[in-house]
Figure 1 (tube, rainbow, N blue to C red):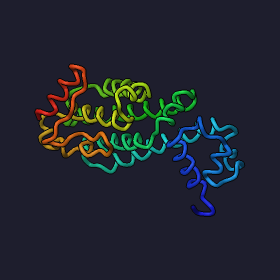
Figure 2 (cartoon, rainbow, N blue to C red):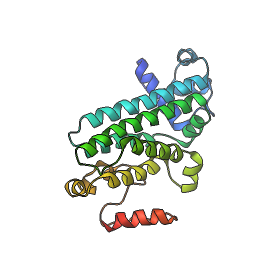
Figure 3 (tube, rainbow, N blue to C red):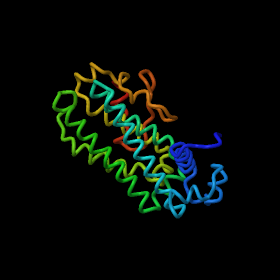
Figure 4 (cartoon, helix red, strand yellow):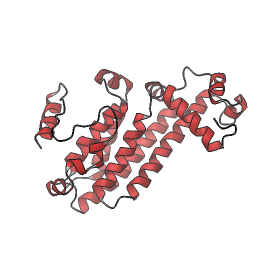
Length: 235
């Protein structure tokens, strides 16, 4: 480790620590020892470890929003732009531990940051969906309705209890949801132009990556899931 870290480097290291472990089982002294810094440097961020945690939660989600916007702006193709935007959220999910997620849900301030992040992402996605409808890339639909569906699903998919019962990481849950979302939005002409394999979401990282052509996706126990995945596997 460098003897002297810039403020941004130090905050990034602290953020990665709480992403990996949450805050419940960490003390200020342990954080200082792990980061090889003084307690004073931590208390310069906030006065309590809970406030420090909330500051890092906010930093993390703001960074994901900014990165997603940048990546989407670099794409000239709308489906690719949306895929890149969603992809960044999935990759962010891969960095979130169960401990972090539990601690976020138990903190009103941290949970508000998570809510704001998801609301901002879904509203931005609504704008992209409306653009896709106007240009004939997506099937006729109302972008704000799509965004509300996404937000409602996102709020439920992130619940630790659901993830535990489903045997999924948060990354895997959102990966599957976004894959179904994009494949359902594309018009038939767009599917022929882009192809499922041409979408960035077909190559999302993670243990739960969707199957490529020639590989079948296992259905869950509900009839709806089976029908959706049977349709996916037929194409």
